Image (cartoon, rainbow over all chains, first blue to last red; front, top):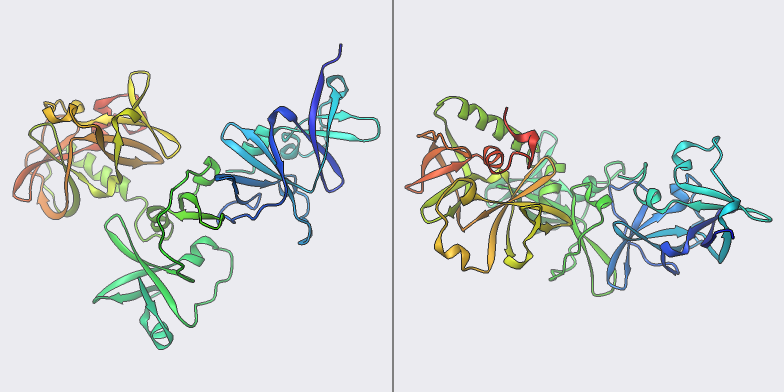
Length: 145
Length: 286
């Protein structure tokens, strides 16, 4: 019996990403953010999540993609990290999908190492690829203080 | 808070070479532009029109912070920041305002260090000086700001104010243990506590065990904080004094007459070394 993993999926540009559902606290629409000067631009700001102050990391910037158009408001995928909840800013939310662990592979060696370390693996779905995010490294890895 | 309008805004701010200053009650107040500190790469124009100066104090140094606008004063609950945001020492925390927005809270000491109002390396300079003093009976006379406190029944002690990050009071029940080390959770970190009276082997005051809270002098060096538990904070004084008698005791530089009373001057690195060798091995003098 193959292991089934559930992913909460989202889009960044035309790429399809996923975070294991166990790590996702909630998904919320765009929130006003307070910009924090002197921080790397990957950290977009702080949001008020029902009285809790949560740092928002823009995954487009984390993956070195170009910025969203001004009119395109990002969604928040709030994940649990060792340091409390952290919000990932993404373009659009996808479905929760089930994938078999067997169809995963390591990200290709040709990927830049800084970006490669943000990915757990690549799942080969029928018509596209699912890039599985490494939550902890996305929050704490290189490129962040 | 000082607000300069129109003519005064242009004339009130003078320059000492490149450093802007303002005459506040006859004394020169160094000025720091918050805009420039927070956006070092952005071109910020000199403010025209009115200027708002918030007069702040970090360590023993007064300085004026120029802000765009003053909204209000408010009592707030400070919430800690995640560790990424703590890495710059400019913010002490954040809070949620009445309208739900998140506001950042500036760390005045960190900001002053960033703006070089106070010297970041001063801690080190003082400790270097300290170690020189301990190595030989050099008499030194200096005008120093010190924090006076009491430890034990008789212990009247002083610590250089520039070594003190903050004064805190912790309820006794917040004290936890890491191994047999007393610690408290402080600003998202685990801060070890050192009882000054025990480290110096001073008889503990009887009142100590009765009170429900601990008076703690937070000593910060190289990003690490240590809480020095004292019995009573007495005063902050600025006096010139001579360290006259050099003690053999670890953790004490010597004694001086401060406010006409004999006072032991604390040697914090030495004290920490005496209290626990492994607390901060880097600071233990060889």
